[in-house]
Length: 214
Image 1 (cartoon, helix red, strand yellow):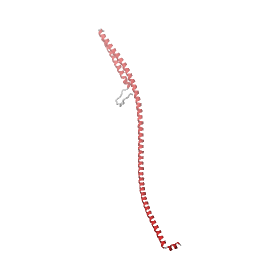
Image 2: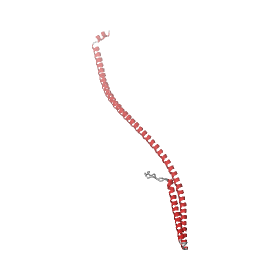
Image 3: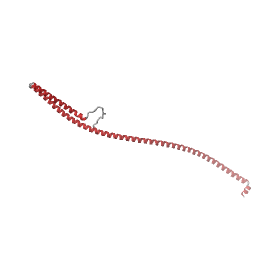
Image 4: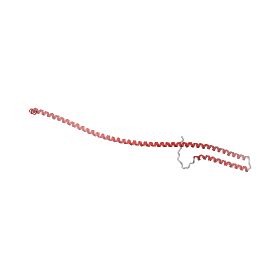
């Protein structure tokens, strides 16, 4: 996967890609024109020299031919270089098109990732809000539990007070029972004493007893 470094935009004016691709071609053509001009110039110079010297020696002619041949060879080399540069320019254009496609694809993927990140952020925010709500509910439950505990403690205290009162009432009832038992014994003693007194009186006063009976 091709990665492209995202560099910040500079304030300098960038050359359009099509002009950048035409610069090597223009340079080649310029060099070719210079060579042609040099060739024409040297041809005219040689022609002038040949005309002035009335076709000098064969050696000078051979040198001129060699110069022309060299220029032709240079021209052919430049043409081959131009063809090579054209091929390289075409390859660079294809590579540039591929890079543009990959950049577009990466931009779309980046946009998709940004959308997914935003969705995740929204979900996280929603979860945070729900967690805060749960925390608030838990705090409310804790407060209610504390209130219930306080009420339970209050009920326990009241029950303890009731138990203490019941214990006190039981003690009082026990004391009352003892007092009742004592009174019952005294009453029993009094009854027995009264009965004994009555029997003694009847024994001592039989006539009165019979009269009373009548």
